Image: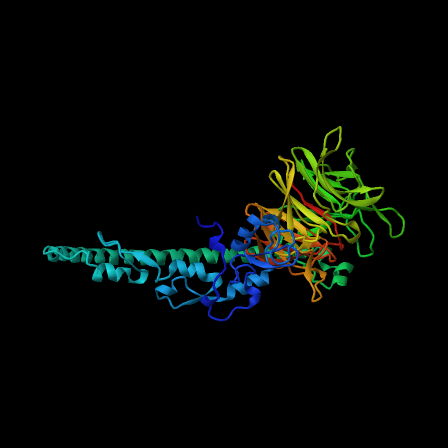
Length: 551
């Protein structure tokens, strides 16, 4: 029986147009890599078929002898994959006469359409195998089983000729009618276009008059100190983006440019096209977490200012903002987090608050992360659901992880694990964890949003290896889209600015990314697949928290 991994074995080097670097060859079969995978620690590369058959019998890397299982196999760097896919290789049907050399990434498309692929003669009684490009000639001219004309074909041809003549006349009449219809439609379209231009011009004049009467001082004032400090442009016209944002965005807390933690709250009002201040929180918070439930914003945990210079402490407090209340006012909740938490993640599931956080002991954070369940109605007794298999973040360096819930599963990304490209999946129903290789690059302290069944990871820091084989953390503007169904990732267009400690929300197929070390804001529209500048916030906010208003 053929091995299930046979189709993923390496390509023989003599099929390639030019000699292939040893760096692109499998360490097992010594052929050019096919669907490459690598060991987690030392980046030894193998064909998926070769290493798949190997790990069925042995759970160690054949090169470095480190532990190796299907779960710990990782995707090689994107640059390696791109280099391999650019290699030019012979067609699979070169032995049948195909002379083409094709890029490896386009091989399958060429093979599917290659004229030298085998094809079977359809003449009854023949069944000969010929090249696809020669099939018609074989069936009509060469095949001894082909059909030949009988003595009655002459009369039949006359009838067919008459039918074609009549059909040609009918087609000509139809074409004339179609041209007449197209001419009339063009006239209608031209009239509609003139009407639209007239309406646009009238609307523009009306808007200009309104703006001249109700001139917003916000748009005439100089940029904020944060915008000057970051040297980023401040967008001044709400008409550039307001039409695509149909819900208000609320951003809370964070650390300011003076290193102080703030309790201030501002909201982007989509109707007015600008950021406005709203009621401040009771407690200043940095690295807090927020959710929305029944028109209420629930903010929990985070660092808070102790009043002592340079000393901030995590808190267990939770406060609530009722969006139906007028005027808006924050209220402390009777519910509390089970432990002081920063950089934690929260979700609402079946009327309860799910909390993923680090567990401190004697005021110090341990290497243990747990998932808790807190009822949002009295009594607020918390319950431990699960202990994660490894620590996901370290508060003193702000290497925060991020998580998103998709139905009954929670996907956890980032943290301080040695390989932050892995993805940890927690099943809320089965109450168990599974770790899979997922991301093309290690990433942490980023922002995340959920779009359909895709989780989008934005900015943060990524880990690269220096010439001395040491880890180096770099702020990035890369955007990764992770498919929760297949576990595969793809890169989206990069953001305009590199952002660390930023945050993001999704509204109407538009991702809005805010903060980090700037007060600038930008947005990504899935309809156009482009990033655009958004109106800057009033303040710089690092590691704030944000939600989309449901109203």
